[in-house]
Image: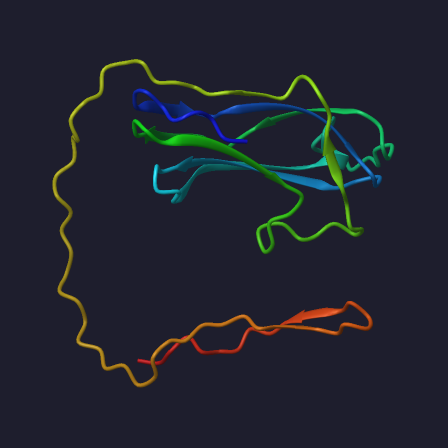
Length: 178
């Protein structure tokens, strides 16, 4: 979901709150919500995010199966953030059912459907007076004189068996060596 381009910069300070009305085709599932800034050139910068196990929507201390295909009202606080979205940028709310490796996948493949009405995001907008940076310039040591023996070349090839649908991601050790 993308907003119109901003007419003025928008300073967000605090934790955005999201309300969603949805249903899941399983007795559980997860949702991941990302708040992004989209530049006029289409570049995307994540501002903040939040996650929720739908089976813990009512009580974060216990897992309770939800009734599949029943309406759920979700209230989700995204992580606290301080961010200024420049003029001309758009805000984007991206919703998904996973974010591996941040969240382990659900037991079953889950389809989450947003239902009409009551989709809302409340942004904590800072309207105070900004202050100059109160910190001195950082100080660091001289970089180490390192010799690179093997240049890093990370990759994550995925192999899929087209008959069974099984997929395997291999993570070879090509992280370089100094």
